[in-house]
Image (cartoon, rainbow, N blue to C red; front, side, top):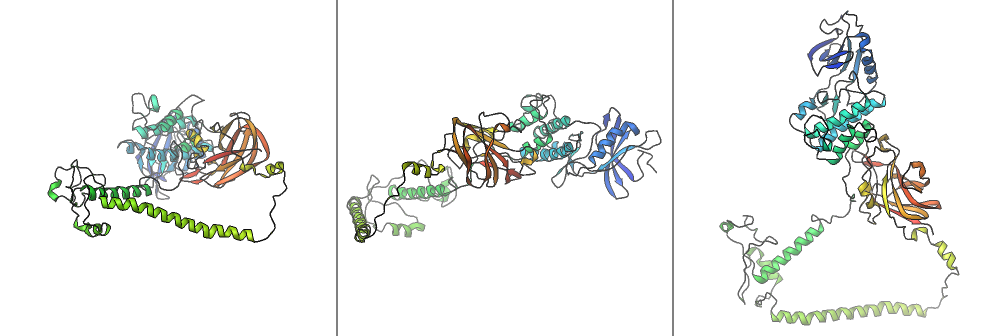
Length: 555
């Protein structure tokens, strides 16, 4: 028995119509939230009018979507073509009902921040990429059909749309990203990937991604939803990548040393020149400092009032510090000079005492040298024994015995990211100089890739090609990384560009901290390519870096 309203099987009871009406060349599609009476759950039912052959293409697409299992796309539970002969049998697709707030409802309160927009669109793009892998263009990507699930995931309700293409899906993802960041619907593109006259996207990399996703030029547009997902993943910012090390900022030991020094200087200044005593609580009105009692001795504080004492007097000492002051300066009767220096008696003690201390130190050192070093030397002279002789090796043998690593590294004239399998947006190209600047505290790093250590399945690798300035014999490469465990190949070539096959493999291995990769035989080359083939786990995915690259010349 079928429903007299929609022509659905009696199993599905429509509750209310939801979502926009989809109009196609073969008819229209209406969507309902319905109750599955057999499994007692809410479902989304979409009905194509008319049914029969007119809906065949759409039903075929729905059957393909039924093989997908990703939280970003509503699952397909059931589908039927109907007969289209007016007997009441409808063409329908039954989807998972996704609870949550639609993207359109969320954006009514304002645009998203960068992190939220990246997360939402990345998760949606990952689901669309799964559909593209099985040959299905999803279609229907709009703020009204994208739902923010309560558990933080994202879902698309209407799967699949009646029609669609892969490139239309990519353009729709770019439009949704723009909508999330600006709060305005994508229209005619203006500068920065924004609608003409609309707000600009503040993040340059996201503005470029929107522009490329919506581009119709084959040379500039993005080729896959998977590339969008990878580019939206969190990545290191521009600039040299810092390496974990000692805390030498103002929050570390330098700050503590500076505070100790400033406090000591202030205390000495107050004792010598008569710094301000603690004022009464009501004297703080109108002052340019905190109105808290006991906070009158902040380092570096200057209230613009000069305090001086008459000669022969001493500054008042707060009761809380009387004992400490007495312990540090037991000579209470010595006057302080008017120029802020020590008294003549103390100055005389310093002038006479310091040279005496220095003389005593010199005598002690001389005694130690005489009793230890000279006695040992005399004992060696008295003991008979064979006289060691130098091995009879020729200069040529000595030169060949020296390890290649002892030679100074070859000078690297420059470098560039080598990404022939990428989408035109190489990983952190500005950071390449940090990989050969002689400072292992800076590095060139890849983007963060999700899914697998093999660059998320997007490409076989990425690397940096280094220019030695001229062709010269090379025996190997020393590599330092802050991501131990990365897999690399060291390749050489005659040109800085071209495809990967233009750079034959000279050696390969895994880099753990600092690793020397030697060639089987020296190679005369100008360009050395360090090609990363495997990444290591990082935040939210996989990444790798090159902190220092040293090319070892052949000797």
